[in-house]
Length: 511
Image 1 (cartoon, rainbow, N blue to C red):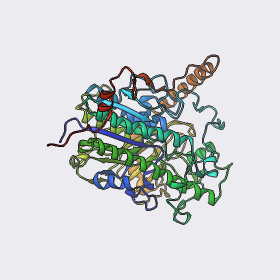
Image 2: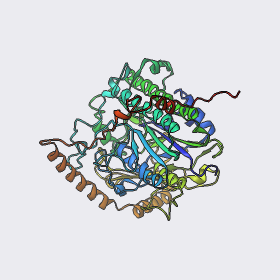
Image 3: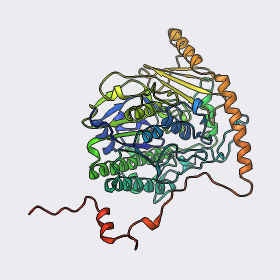
């Protein structure tokens, strides 16, 4: 492999469903930068998140471990500081590791191995969003509702645009700062955007990239049969889908805004890859594009995430490194927990023998280098809308979903991509379902996990109630900037400052 210490740029989107991208067969959304990355890179056609919710998915992405091991059970569960992440492994091996944007770390450790964190987070770091499995009918105010769909459309500015503009600027500036720096360490920069996460609102520039008559509507928009899929019915209740019905026009507007938001993420990807080119880092850099989970976008009558259907759980995973990895498409199922062992592998750490804590994923390096690699996906859901652990296994063309409180689901994803026919009770699939049930029983002690989740929820609700009283001490990351060392200051030799800040340095033509 050329260049033993490559620079790595990871661009992460939020709530971006792989089936909505041209690289994965969709033909509406305009994503020229992603298309170029995919054409020259390795496209994993069947990549999944390991938990279809933000914070737990990101903890799994960082650690290479499932949520039942990290104990990040929901969006308000602490990510323990003693869990090694790829940032720890790469930093220990000599990489400069930095984060710009969202990672939704909950708890007092807001770094998790990163040497630099260039922005704050968009979401809170406390226990305020803790679900309560003991009261499944209650809907706290912070749960999703249908306002994101009912109010979808054009905006001039949003909270999310503010955040992503800061993220893009901070990441771009870091690349230029490192190019001007005397620090020659390789870097791993994670730029994590909050789009195209709802609310579905985008500026006129991106809204106008698509027309109403171009917008494809949900293929199967009706609500699922509660008798066959009670988890979907619970998710609909959690999101107030039945009590706040939306019109066809509102659905179309939400999808059009979502597609515009994807184009906005694509623009920011292009901005950062252009910065790699301008700084000279691109010639030996690995660019990874992925997302924390998907978006149902009205399919099956569902919105947002929180389920294991393809729209919610299948994510883009594209790795570009011209001259290092030959372009190819990989059909084998893989998942986000495979990225941490892959990055540890790049850093010279044996993902099996050299890891300080066991990975639940496996290095994708064989696939990247043109060989056969690992396949298979395990995933979990333990947050709002659940009343017991929900787990998923994907092997070959089959997807198996199991929850002790619900009937099993079994789908032939290749033959039935819309997952309309549950084959769990099909006599022809008896051997398949038996094999999956045995694998799930071997992999998970669901009774123990259920008890641990409920105990964690009770502890966190107690702590959160106490911390809301009296003086508040926030865990939210506060980026530090020393303005006395920025730009031009009187203690700095002016010519030296201007010369060092200029990139590339001025060179006189030969005489």
